[in-house]
Image (cartoon, rainbow, N blue to C red; front, top):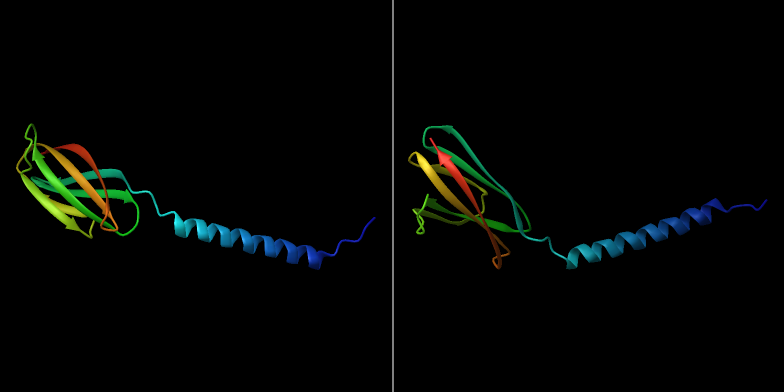
Length: 119
């Protein structure tokens, strides 16, 4: 039976792990997160008051919101880009289409739409 030099085996494994971690770090630094909207959450706790939360994945993001009355093609209100992903709205009862925008690093943009009913 052969003798195993556990110290050398450990040092070898440690160097392999360091190489793997370095390669992973380089890959992550050169492949930024893919920008996407994961979910638009509409929460209403009282009459006419709606909180819209835009859940998204990406880096250095800004958020905007357009509010359309159901059936209209021109937005009733445009809330321009801001750092916060939460919007507090005061709306009259009815049906609305919310168009959420997310911008990453002041360049890439994505948008998604959600219909809501306000009571």
